[in-house]
Image 1 (cartoon, one colour):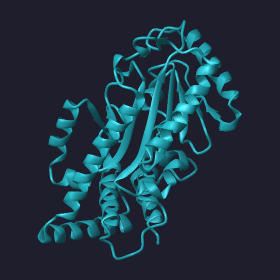
Image 2 (cartoon, one colour):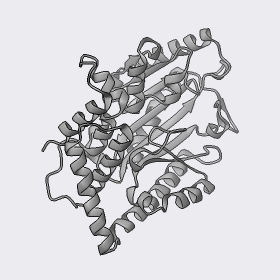
Image 3 (cartoon, helix red, strand yellow):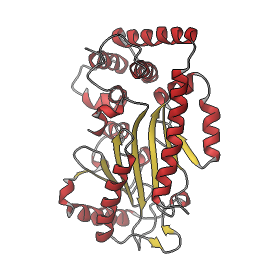
Image 4 (cartoon, rainbow, N blue to C red):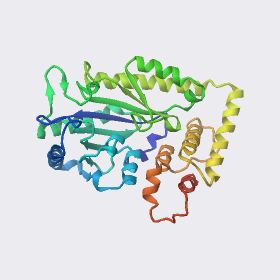
Length: 337
């Protein structure tokens, strides 16, 4: 999977390009009926089947249970909105799950491409190429003046959202994060939690993305988002590199304690696990620990300790084992050297 890449062990964990598209002659999803939903699914599925080089697979959300849906949300294959959508939907994805096409979410088509690390230009090229292929097989709703027509006005124009997932523990610990995010919102940037709109920042992880897509081209939007993100990264690095000796001793003690709790705890809630894993991720990023790093990258560990992911893998386990106990045991296993 894309998140198993070692590039995820950095301040910039990952990045994503998302394109919103709709088909002509159909109402937007908020107004369409079930018959329209199935017609759109069939059209996009037929188009994707012709793109054999991508080796796509299909998931029908209405055919899986809530736990499985939650797992797909937690590993970023689908959005929380798609998981909650009551009418027919479909997800088309590649083997690595770095590419997914969500059908009948807020728009008829949501193309998203994700990768670990910060090389968003390469990912944009992948997303753009896939979009070009689909546009030759499907008729997009497009206006010569306003660009791609979308359900939400903030997506009209290019229909593009460029985003970076970043780990900003020192900006959080020093209380700078709130002021910085207020400034970014005034500049037309969106700051969201780990799973996008309406979600909280777990483990000091945030999504930074452009808010508007109208009036600028794709290259400019990506460049603006990248520049803002790397400015945040510089601020995070500055705090890490200029911490006072007294504060650093206290930080080192806290990071070792966090590792010790994770290494030996028998019960961990999601919130506590994410907070502690954030500390451990920071400890390895700053080179504080004097022992070997675990085989798994820390972001993958964060994903693997989410409720849906664990429940989907533990259905054959004894019901006497609590979720918090299972989470603690999973993390202990991941931390084995």
